[in-house]
Image: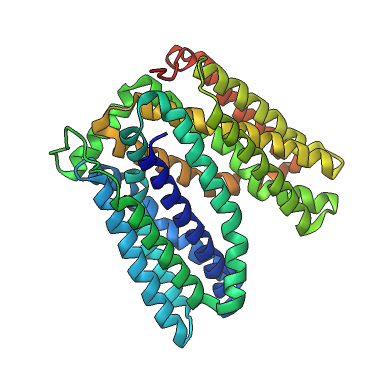
Length: 394
């Protein structure tokens, strides 16, 4: 594995760690200043500029050097975090939290599609699967460590310390990115941004494999996100496991995802990707249903472990196949559409889960989510381009 790629992954993992610290500090500060509903509203506000500009961000990425855009995004967030630390030293306010959340969301609209272009430009095609697994493993570990670290830092120094630590992680990310070569496509986009966006959407519409992968991801996430967020809280409450039960269930999922990523680091996938994705998604759907009907906590935790294992497998295969089959001139736009779909589906999936559980009950709501995953598995097998697809071997 390329040393440059490992350096890139390490930098991004540190940045994700800092983001988790920030989210904990943001939520805690908003609750202390106003209320839990204010915290939720601020987190929702941060998603608005990200979703509003994300598709245009992909078109911008395909016109410029991805590395420079990522460095610029990190430097902007570093400056804003340091400014927020200084202001928060005088006393945090809701206006400050909203302003920082908006800037971070807008910066993400450039950073996310730019980051999607890096792995296939640093790695040979045969290493894309392993590279995706390493990236997934590092991100999962950073997510796992970031939240408790954020809690400690907020307890010790409040919002100012958390902001300074977040700024430091952005600087470390910049240092990692500065060591990479330029990341400009050989055929930069010359169209205006809106025209480039339309060209990207046409490219996806005409590319049957990428279009199918996007649909599979949408169905899978729609069936997966609700149960693993709102659903776990409902199950834990109904079984009397309390808030600690939610943590144990999530720990099972996280552990399974880590094990899957570790396994995929060591395995070079040689089989048909679509068949493996179908099997993984189908098993995941069955495990999602099992969480709702498990009478004992150990059984529910076992089911979330299976969900994590299959989620890790499918995520690595999906990422590697998408990177291998995307034309280099469209990587930013394909990455932006994928991020837009996945990020946009999250609040919808959680809202649907809540409404379905209220109206039909928790177990039927979980069963409906599992049915969406089974539909995604069937789609993997129904479209020959995906069913027979294989990852590059040399």
